[in-house]
Image (tube, rainbow, N blue to C red; front, side, top):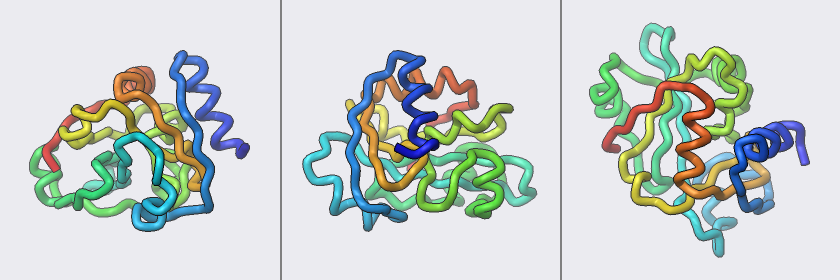
Length: 163
């Protein structure tokens, strides 16, 4: 188990959130991960780390894995200007993550709660969700209600949009 995963396990344990762990080869994209999700009963998510045009606001957009995010429509709904993908350096600075391992669990590294979380409204109908525990060789599944508890405990601003 990597240090990144240990930190996620420690936080989930502290919050009393049960999870199921699934190991697989390293995957950097949803397309690569899909072949390893067979038999995992959960709504699989895509996680995008974005910034606004000025670079003074950062967003973690979480959506169902088969959806494509129209960044202009997301920006309109959250009330910000043009959104674009943030650099690997910004990802490391704000969430302590590397590309290919983007996950809401990275919020445990956002001590000043500066990253705004944007959730796809369709995730509200899910019973279980899957995410990397900050390393792309493992997938955790947790109950959707427990994911909401995790987000609340992190203290970041959370907003729902239609993707």
